[in-house]
Length: 498
Image 1 (cartoon, helix red, strand yellow):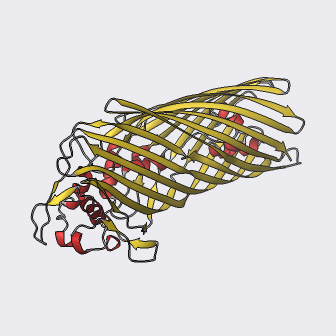
Image 2 (spheres, helix red, strand yellow):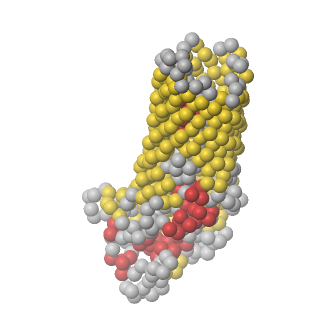
Image 3 (cartoon, helix red, strand yellow):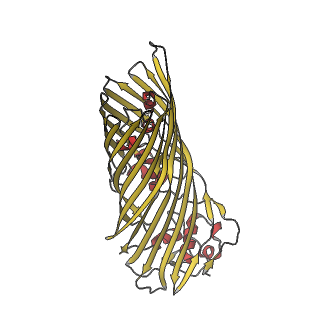
């Protein structure tokens, strides 16, 4: 018998779940494989083109040899205001949403040890550490419109009728089981059943096939998504200067992530002939964990003005965990039917490996008046993969859908006494072969720097935009809203020579 109201009989608010199917998608992996341009104001004002320059705390994340360019012990702290505007198009209906946040996004210091021996091969070495918010994940968007063909029933029927060679769920299980005792697959069927989204084909307890109870379309959808969190990194750096022309360096990086995605999908029906009038499906997913990577790099002076850089960033090996909370509300025959288990499930942890990255750089310095710098990077996103068991099909999809992508950055700086003028441009190819699921990124930046004795104050504005797809659900109802994201960021940094 269906229950109009489901309340968990246990006082525990969390339980362990060993799901028959992992919850991750290729899009989840791509979120960690792609990053963003963050760091100090000087670094951002020049669009991160620092691979052959060094001398900036954020530059060591591009090329770890850059810390040996510093002449003095130096510390930098940076604060950024993030603002994102999302325009959504869902079957011809346009909506807008915005999000903003203020973060301490960078903090680091370098300690330089000069060799006083005039003819020494090793001129100096440097030790540094730098924290950066490598990707601010605060975002929100809202999409709405009429879907002419597909309904939310496709999501729940997919699980109720079974996936692949697995048969459907028994009707007796739906009628007699507690939500917390079910696998993730069966939980989705349980929610859909108690929301009157589908009916059993027969009344037999052994029934395993189900049909939709959703009225004929079109179907009005509203999808509200809010994300909060960050990907962070602490780099422990060592670098050295050999003779007067060669700089070598390496980083050991500790990564950590904290990410919450809250979604609410609403659907209603113009002609509720079956008694089902509307459905709201709410999900909250909390992902957290950490990882490890390393960098190596070199900078060579061809002349006093011309520099070359070469760097390698290893894959990042993550260990992650998810916590899931769900509930569903249906409007049926004029009454609200609420199914809210009130339980957060902690899933088994899993491994993820993101691709490595190669960067070549060129910089030309015009005496003490200015400079121009170029960075070119390559990353093979098809090497992204989950390293835990049970992800074979998703890893195949990642390999088949992702591609090698390049990134180009150019930056310039011109100094007038104690004032520096800066600008930059960046372009990143889509990580997808189709170039559409996540599109290319283009951005530009500008900034100012003011020097005061042994300190400096830097201000930067950076802008970039990118288009992407946002599917309503991970299965069944995978029709996507097209999102055009515009990012406007302002960064303020203070640098002190210690």
